[in-house]
Image (cartoon, rainbow, N blue to C red):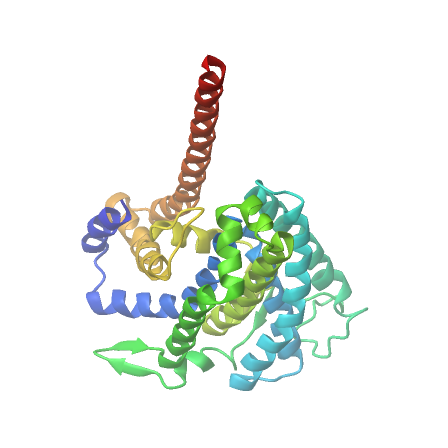
Length: 351
């Protein structure tokens, strides 16, 4: 469906092929790492991790400190990644513990956790940064003297990773180092699947009871999957924000989980199965639609907001359809098992 939408919208939008390829390459480098972090909970049978925004919040906190200390460029990016890791581990462990108490309802629970933690995050950056947590630079603080401004500039860090080793081919900028980092992460995922922990996650994802009987520590494995997803989401958010060049302090993290999950589903993934190929196909299709939809809406109706409404509708719609299909599939499987048990009981009674 998305291929058809893109095929219709691209000619109507009027964008040149060079512009589209350049935009897609930029968005591929910006978003792919974030989407890849969703693989671990899916592997462990926990579905789509809406709580990946916890890692995004950790990255934003780390970047606020980095900006306050005036450490820019590659050193600033590396420092922000290092700072985000312990925060992400704590948040991921907290999230994993809660999800272990909500088996079978992980996705809606992770969605609620993301809302809850957003409230705590806003309490931290709006009231505690300044009076409790020292913030040295007044350019980061609100005029009242405490709390962080709505936008934190990362101008001196903007695209530091993307520009390092970047090459230009036919007017298209290719962020080589960013793509190398993403490729290394892909290789790590491939390698991780073959490790004992990776095999344990897959076993837990297929059947928790069988995995527990085989001696696998199910709860511990599930927590590790969420912690890994949260940590890598934090690293991916640093890559995302260095590309953007600023932090929307109170909103950058809010939509990131929704759009990453939508892109993964558009690429052909499902709630219980995803591959690296789904990630890259999803980024290309989903963000092609994001680029061309407003221009297409403006050309057809004279109002670019039509395209904006459509892409938001598509984002939420694809997630809704995926969840409905997953629930329907699960209920059909339960019904089939129940029917088989009834047949077995009748055979026993007839004997």
